[in-house]
Image (cartoon, rainbow, N blue to C red; front, side, top):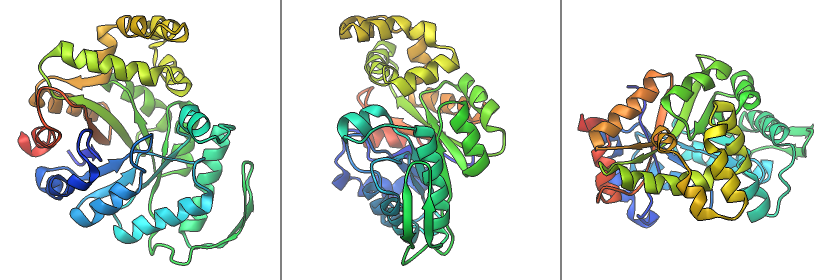
Length: 319
């Protein structure tokens, strides 16, 4: 397998305590470390630290919202990481969700496709060292130029959950990022993206042989995500609309308990990788066999393993 990524920071481990495990990742067989940005750490700080702790890792945010930073600031942060990790930084951008953008940050979640396209086009120019003076559909930039543009502009990959964004990623970006999918769904995504671009996916992995423990954890996570409009639409496209309808109806009615209860086991087993560490590694390889380029493990606490022990147990070198 060419790539095997890990989501950092790990749940349950303070960022300040990550140095030991991050410095081991390349030796364990991990090739990538990808951050996220929801309501925990920001996307860039963990990568800046990781760039110094393990100089062999490829690094990227999956993803940075295109709304919550101005275009120029986003270019500056990308250029900074590209300088800290020359040739090893990939910029992942995307719309994020209305919850994060509008409810938490007070920014209107408008024209997400156009905003992502415009940000991508701006970043291509800015990270190449060009002076940008451009009226885009969703914003305007008047004469911005990076003082220290990267010698080689970093690749830019797009968060893409449905056909329009996947096709944009195929046309104008260097790949696509997705999550919350089963191995069989990779083929559906590839049908829109094509066979050649890199496809990155965050996989939620709970290394426990207690299926009920994993499903209980998984139900909470699925309810939190799949009731968000962008993910609800994604899974309707993937064919899970009917299976998730009872959950969405109960959630909309305010019955959180029922919403969890009516999520089918099959849906949880599709979307959460669980079992022994060996079984989890085998399941991850099913995704790769279906066309996933870069699996990025998000370790979900379970099975009595500490976050660090889980990372070691799930590493490719454990086989």
